[in-house]
Length: 82
Image 1 (cartoon, rainbow, N blue to C red):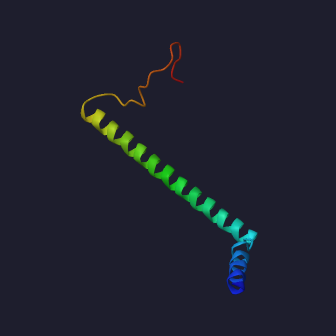
Image 2: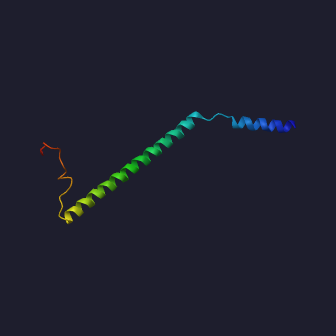
């Protein structure tokens, strides 16, 4: 019976061993870096897609004889091009 108690105590000591804080902080920083890179990649893809859609819209408008929306966007009343 005492041998079993000794093993349980040993297992508890292993479980209660504190984590290395510098290692934990390093891993946290790595995770943040990966998240930042993923976010930047997503932004880049979204910007590319938006640019492609604008170009496609311009080509379609041009093919249909419609004005370029960016050049002929509505301006607030009383304003002029300048």
